[in-house]
Image (cartoon, rainbow, N blue to C red; front, side, top):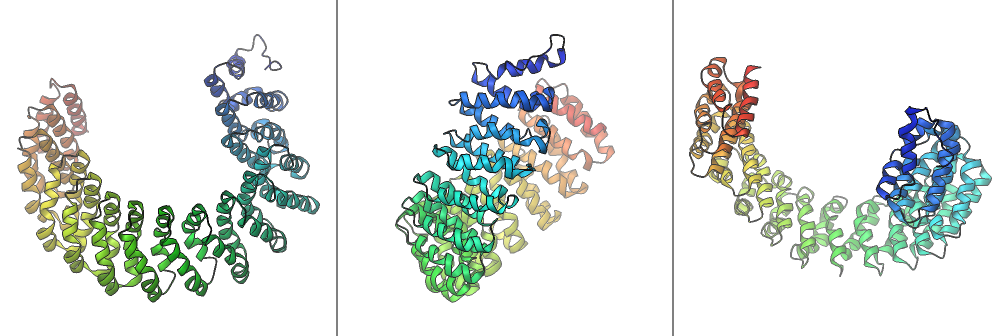
Length: 587
């Protein structure tokens, strides 16, 4: 900038001069880099020069660079961080000018970031009445749509810190934004309505906010009505229960039946929050039929959003009503034509088990669980698996084993590796619930099979799974049921299986204790002589993990000599891991 000149002998400020020059660079990336360092520049210039020279210069830049959204976005963010650099709260008002300029930008990201920074500045202004309210008035009554959109979220920040006259003026300005001819302005005002209402007194909420809210909820643009759903939640929490029921619930009922699927989707997405604002009688009498309609909506997106809310809503109503009205819908959703609807239902249907109880779960929900476990869409299968613990605690292990376990075993070989992974993650929980004997009969063999899976992530998870099972059933069980199979795999013709076996021995070695380690160590030392380098360095990594568990005599007689031999291996990776293991052994 022309006014910011450095003295010729001032070497310390030379880098700052370069940064300032780059603010005008033709290369957008250089300008962006310099804007990102505004705090560094302002620190070097000092508060006074930052206020008098840098900030006006930035305002000039903002007005001229209408097409450089990336630079302007960075500037809008950095200006909010300069409060201390312009001299603290007493001088923070100087930042309002460039931020006001940025609020006029058409790019929503720039405008939103400028509003965010304006709110940061407004919070610390000691004289908001004199400095911020005039800015708010200019934005709210500006000719450009962008400034009026930017004005809406700013009212709540300073409302309580201005005079009564200014409060009245601000409410009138906000009311005009709610009635603006431009839908985007009305949408912004509707979005900000709840925040402003929380700052107003009860009287103003009743006389001014609620009429605006009712009008916006009936707006001819669905983009405005969508935002009104959020306000139902906010105002429902602000108002006393009886007032919320008489004033807010009619709007909720109206939005439930809106002609736009996007509005109905938003109602479905906020359904349980909306229920929290009204009495249980109304929830059971009117919201339950409302949810049924949403679950049967013609649009799959609406059914999906509603399906996510089924379990949460059923916990708010009686079991009889849930079985009578909601369960028939749940049955239909389990075979819905949309895979997203079925996946959404699968993620919550297990949560119905504690709500309806054991007998109803066995009679009515188990067939649906099984259907979803065998669903064509892998996400539905995955979501059911991830909630198995919710149902096993209700119906008991024996019933789970008889009804769902065959399907779970089938999914252990699912073609989607993420489904197999989800099963593995739940095996320790199933083991805890089933007990050792039952587990050995049904699932034990499967846990060893996973070590030979074609996907590395599955083999890795299977290794960790064996460790967790050892912690559940004890070392003796592992010695009988796990160790022999893993040791046998160490001699497999496929080097990938040998690598997995070595990793398994290392993981198991950390939980089985020194006595069992004696049986594992020869296999690892044998792997240190494997013809495949990957197996050799895996052996080094295993030995490094087991060093703290081994006796000093064993280290000196067998482990260190093997590692010293590997430290001169022809493969650089083997040498590296051998050296690391030797350092661990020497520590």
